[in-house]
Structures are given as C-alpha cells and as structure tokens.
Image (cartoon, rainbow, N blue to C red; front, side):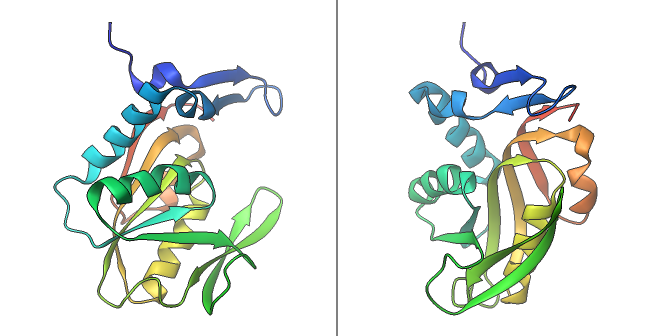
Length: 175
C-alpha cells in the first residue's frame, strides 16, 4: 500500500512538555520517498496559481521552498532571523512563546507588484508567517498563498492569518 505523507511524520508524546504531541518533520526528510511526497504536495497546492516568487521561512521553509522553486523555475527568497542577511533589509517583529523575534528580508528581494507564496514546514500560532507576509507587503508584493507541510489546528494559526489563502498538506487537530 502506498504511504501517505503523514506516515513519514514521527510523533513524540510529551515533548517538550507533558501533554504535547511533537510532530517531527525530520521523518519526512530522512526518507527520499517521503521528501518527494512532501514537495509534490506543496507543488500541487500552487500548480494552478499565478505567482512570481517563493518565500521560505528560516530554516525549514528553506528545505521545502527551495526544491519547489527549482521544480517550478521560480526565484527563491529567504526570510531570515535578524542579522543574517548581508545587504540592506526590511524587518518585522513577531511574538514568540516567551518574548519576541525579528525576521528580515533583503530590500530588493520582492519587487512591487510581485505575487508571492510563502512556504514553511509548520503552521502553529501563525506568528512567523504573518511577519513574513508583512515583509512581502512592505516591499510592495502580494501574498497569494501560504503553504505548509503540517498544521497544528489547536493553536489557531489560521485565525492570525485571516484574509490569506492558507493550505496545509497535513492537519493535526491538537497542539
């Protein structure tokens, strides 16, 4: 029987704390068939979409977004933690569980009017990808889709991303 993408995800109960079911994406990456299935799933999400550029969230968004960009022959843009990009940047601050963080993109990464999709491995609270959307929009771009390998629906990330087209290959009901 053909394996589904969720068959490659390794679930670790009570990590990092009791009651949490940790969904480990590395099981997908460690299997060539699983990785191909993940990229196929993400590419399928955007196959009929008009867009110009793929933006990947540091760091696992790079792992999934870069192969998509290669396969679809689209430019790939990095959204990185503050201080990692060498040229002039724009930045957005977002909430973490304990405090805040800042993401940056090169100022010339998105041209005004470009349509972007944002790719990451996981949507949890939605804070990271919301910050990336703000960066795209600050540069004059338009976010036409947000694509994820996994979604933790119990953390309500979609609510924070209301107004955006959000799609996940796998949706887990819990946290």
